[in-house]
Image (tube, rainbow, N blue to C red; front, side, top):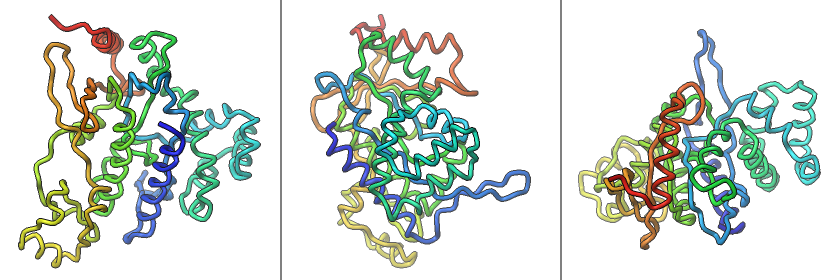
Amino acid sequence: MNKKTVDTENQKLLKIWTDRSNLKPKFNDTKIVKGTSISTPFLAPSLFSPKHFKFKKDVCELLILGLNPSYSLGGWKGIFSALNPKALKKRSPQLNSLVKTANKNGIKQRHIDSYFKYNNHKASKKRYLNDIPDLEYTAFKKHVYFNKVRELAKVILEPKNSNWTHLDLYQYRKTNQNDLKTLASHPGNVCFFEKQLGVTNRIIEQLKPKIILVVNAYAGIVFRRMVHPIQPKFLSNISSKCLILKTVRLATDLTETQEKIIKKKGLIKLSKDQIEDCHLKDFHGQTFDKKIGAYKIKIGGKNQVSRVFFSGMLSGQRALDLGTFERLKWHVSAVKKGKTMK
């Protein structure tokens, strides 16, 4: 993927965030902790760096998929301290100030919240587009989460092979997975989260990875929904202001009953282009190949076949046990080398 394509997808993400921030009811990310209501601001999205997608001969051999970027004080402290001082000279005064505070060990959650609050970036998207891709790439290189991911990639592709990358399905920052699932399923947020998957969809179609490894159980559920052939189905209970159709085929072919539901609920009937931006394209189905013990999907309407593996998390409290992790490395490596399960 070239820089122009990456920048285009980043701009689309910012538009998705702007559209959601302007929509009523306002985005509400509130958690009750010990009877106290703690509200997280509407955080700006994770953005992509062109460095994420640089491969020898432009071939992505392995794509590792997670669910979404985490958002923790400890994690960001480590990322800020790992930033290249020379690169910081080209970044915003806000980021430089935050890094100085972090290096003095005086950073608090409120400092990070203030920096990532989306409303603080709406007036200066250029600044955000300059800052965040570098931050995300530094996280990719330095965050402890990627230690196991990197170990796995080295075994699958051999140590010197760097033709792999990592991508999250959603770009919304949230550490607790259950909280993310609650937010994503809220009627007012469904369109917002589906559009994020649309961005992910386009990037995967651009990369055409030979192997896809999904390393989160819930991300596996979401990804299966992305690649499984979807039957036309009208969804009438998604949002009070956003109508999503699972297939474009229904965009101009609504039944009289469906039209009545739209009118009764005050739904906005999206145009074909808007629906295409919301819904998930079909990755031409999925089939399970018993010879390799993995799924196969076709990407982009061509003969490019990707082999897909599903796994649990590689790190954290719900991480795979050591035996399962070793077996995962053996399995994917064997398929990469063209071996079959006899």
